[in-house]
Image 1: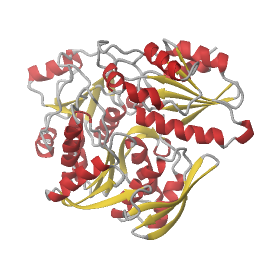
Image 2 (image 1 turned 90 degrees about the vertical axis):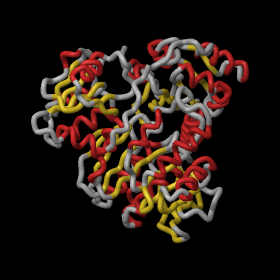
Image 3 (image 1 turned 120 degrees about the vertical axis):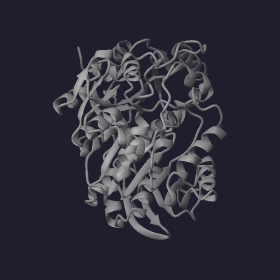
Image 4 (image 1 turned 180 degrees about the vertical axis):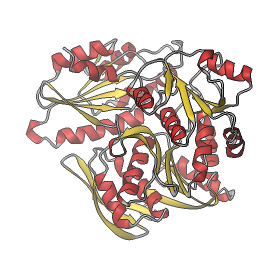
Length: 485
């Protein structure tokens, strides 16, 4: 059972950290992308920082190189004697020994989202990127724009972005850009002045029980901007628009700034003359009816145009100049594990992607197909290796998964990554492979493990193919195994 988010708020958390006798902060689950970023920000603020996680990783090595003590087991003895605060990720269980010890000793315990809400309050512009899909990409796009504008942003993202050297960046006190995760309503502890709503959809089925619950949560998030804030909302998404309008009607947000990729040409930010050149999107960026020039994206997928419009709108309302916005979008090189090029095997190009929801799969493979088509006569097959993430998501969205791979010529399916769940939903990757083959003979094959999938790719891949290795679990082991002979 996951541990719930706290909702202590910045003032109370600040009082705990201002205790001169206790200057240590401990992070349970410190090896995660966001948690490691928070730990490093805390260390840079002058606190003694330590934490725990299950395994050594590049992120934990970075922490240790920065002076953070990392324990690779969870134990009560890990907590320092002068611990002022324990920060935890909601992925841990109630019986975590460090959490139990902190409670026994009366040490305040704060959820990751609550702590992030505290950290961001000292910044003037706080841009929070929310939505069921595209958060990390949009956060990284915003970051690139602010970097090109010399706006010195502080950033916390859910994915590594190479130009800022990781998943976080420590900048000035003016601009804070962050990814706002909706799972378990974590984003309701944040304090955005600009709230981006990319889109809403049926997702996180182990927490959200209806679309109405999702709309209500996103409306509450938009309302956190306050009467002087701005909500940047996708006009093409009816649910996102409803949430934004609720926030506006209640006085929770000051105004709306809309964006649209074509369905609503009267939106504040739109794309005109959209085309695909060499597999990549090109469009004219329109802001409030005026052209900001042509943008040539360096990342595939028409869906990236929506991320670009949202990023442009957020930057514009924060005072970033139009030319910096256009240049920043053109310079954006893609976040880690978002159609990230990894190399070649047997002459086939290999990309790594985090997509795990049918909508993400469909959009990403659509962009990959355009890359394939750009090769003309040399075009090969589009092969997708996919690992479903959680039994509940796979079961609830099973009909959508059956059509999500339409753009692919071949699909290799690895066993479901269980994460926090047990196998009691009656679904499996083997069944999904059979059902995909029933719709298109020979389309899918079941490969139980990442090693099995890697072996199959080495045997099947050929010159001109494009391979997308996709999922949110340990599917990255496929990529690692491809070049290990």
